Image (tube, rainbow, N blue to C red):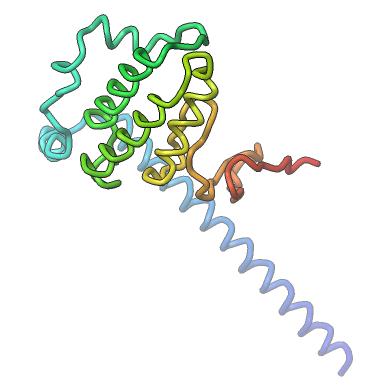
Length: 196
């Protein structure tokens, strides 16, 4: 009787191990097939119908090209030395920032559009007029902009200088493994070293 129980127990263990092995092979095959299909989709040329479908979501009215000259766009994309500006230059920079937000920030209308952003712009300009030129430093400008825009923009990708204005949780992939492991870190400037 004892031998029958042991034999039965061994057969259950072997059956379990065989079914686990089959599941792993099925998962590996599924992942391989899925990755193959994704690679084919990425590497294959798009069909004309797919291009037309996607163009419906792209704003063909590239207003930023008509608002800013090529020289201005190049200056905007080239970081200059960190130095202070006077209040009149800061007013110009704030105008340019809000024009860029309107023309190029994808979530502009999602976060309230012109009315919301114009209110924030006016609040920023009101504070700029109260500042002395000696108080206007790159860090002070970052702080001023972040303070007013953080109440509007809830986008964890949005950064002003060195300030990430959103305190929403973020997900990062920071463990180098075969299959990435995602870790939720909150709130923003606090991060933790998972390696100790």
